[in-house]
Length: 295
Image 1 (cartoon, rainbow, N blue to C red):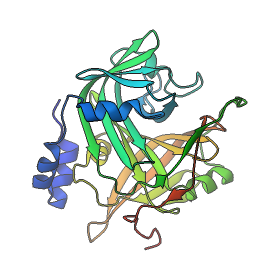
Image 2: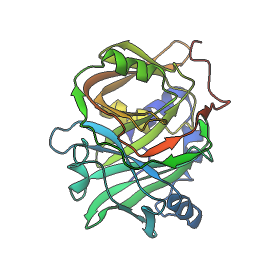
Image 3: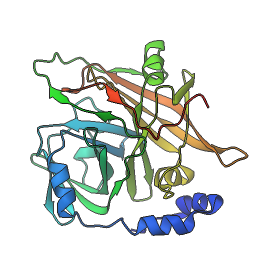
Image 4: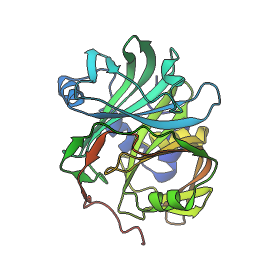
């Protein structure tokens, strides 16, 4: 599969960064290098992006496990033991052969992240992904969290579903320093990270969010996807309680006169799950690259 499609190219050309994108794109491969395989085996969580085959809605989700639950089991394959909770919106997608899926492994302890996109194959113990894109990102806008603990004996709570943000959820989003963005293209999916100081995501109304698109690697994979297919999913984590807030809807990019970009997300569905994850992280040290969200 070509790395860049018409959506990504249109943004690169509009902003005059096609040559830079081609240079950065040379780091994207199909194979999993030994250093990447070693990184994966240390991670306690993996973020996923895919479309629900029944509804068509795009979601971002997260699964956790003891380090080693994600492993490279071939030059272009990762195998994952386990999966999301039965009530997770991506349960059906992750049980469907040939589902396009995007993944991102992010380690706040080292401020490193790795993305792997490909086609999913269910396995007896979870699922595998045959990769067509494997690459790392720089640590920009990634908050550092020093420690991670796993708690046991959690009481499972059913998710709360809705079609707009409640006041509590709006406060949760407004206080976030990180979220994950799921997007799709024909035959593919992508999971990416967005970070900033608290307040970088604005709640415009119970049905709309907005955030500035900070300068990145010039590839415009996520925004390129949204240019051709506006379906999107957002995942917010409470790093101290394990709460997850998953949103599905549509996103569009607006351009200011100076080229500044704002992404607007319209909420269609919400899934709010208290204590969904067993991981508990320390307070963040914010990235020095984070812009002032009020500027």
